[in-house]
Amino acid sequence: MRRAVKKMGKVICAYQLGMRSPTELKLLEDGRICMTESGGYELFSREAVNGKGEKAEAGDYFKIDSAGYPYPNSRDFFEKHHERVGENRYVQISFPVTVWKKGEPMDEVIRYLFKNRRITIKRKDKKNYFHAFLWGAPLSAKSDAFIVIYDVKRGKEGEIEHVDFNFVAKEEFEEAYDYVVG
Image 1 (cartoon, rainbow, N blue to C red):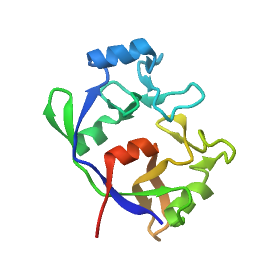
Image 2 (tube, rainbow, N blue to C red):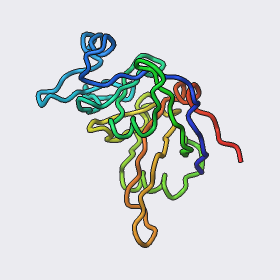
Image 3 (tube, one colour):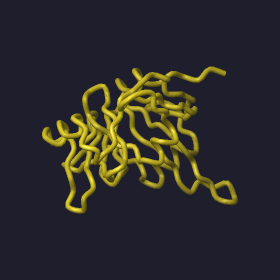
Image 4 (cartoon, rainbow, N blue to C red):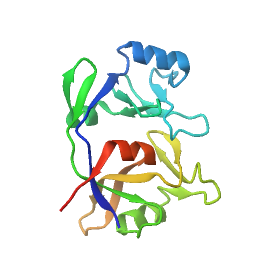
């Protein structure tokens, strides 16, 4: 059973890749962001595994989570869901989304993700328990992470065809989300 949540409407910092902001340059220097041979980027988020970063392109945006890891947002998604309030400062335009975590009953969307191996589990590894291929890279999350469902695409008969989701670490979730009441 998933529950509805919204991101808190706080001001966040975000940076557009390729603009050579001091933050981007520092993360490039530290190896948390790398340039690819094709001119794109790899961002090494908290969930990145196997030395593979999340893929992004120049013009996409990145935020930094509470633990100091960068994570990408496509330019279209970011500009649709954020309002600029200052230099590199934005307020997220929050829409309700649903979340699920281990131990809760599964609904049809969560069952779809597991049945179609969009999410897999390594039961003996609590630090890399959930696995998925997102943002062009293999990602993992701890067993206490939340699975945030952004969108569900359905076919003509109502069958699930695609689910847009991501992992959110428990600490990040507790800091950034509120449950929707009613």
